Image (cartoon, rainbow, N blue to C red):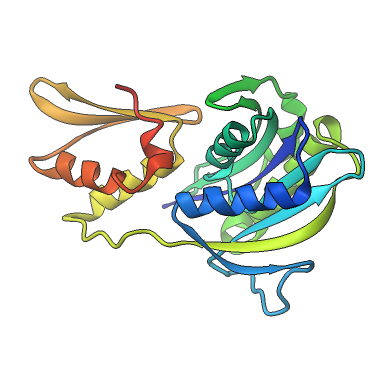
Length: 251
């Protein structure tokens, strides 16, 4: 079984005030199917490492740059795209994602994007940000549940120190929980396919020798799965309530 973890940071590159940014974060996350569970100046005192909510911190550096720090990576670019479009300002996005595939492979990847509304352009990142995590011992990762997260945090700190804005300090702490529609999948395989779509760069439905298939492009990998009769309809229905995933679909 694969383990996927990540973190992200959105930085503003245009005029916007902190209350306006917080309002847009709340509006967009509500549209994406999240509900707010906490807000305050500090993290909730009863927060535990296995908390199922997604953490957000609103940041500012006193010189007009604001930020949104996010404790998971899947929602980062969709949140940035929608905020940029509604506020009509460009944003800079940093993500660091780590994946552990069984006992064989570990990947930690730092990425940077410029977001202008619907336009998302990936920018180059120095490979040295992830150099420290390429030799991770898999025994360590299996035995210590937070080992992969620690490696991700180290790579992320190196990325932001080299290419992020200095002096960003936390001003507000928010917590949200995704409230997905309950789906009774006809098979566990379809549920796993949906999880791939949640993490993908893009996907498309097509046919191969008369049989429906879903082609998924993940960061650094591609996959193709054949669908049985009726499974395409199941996936289509599930996507109706997930606009952040549907926009990645290639027609």
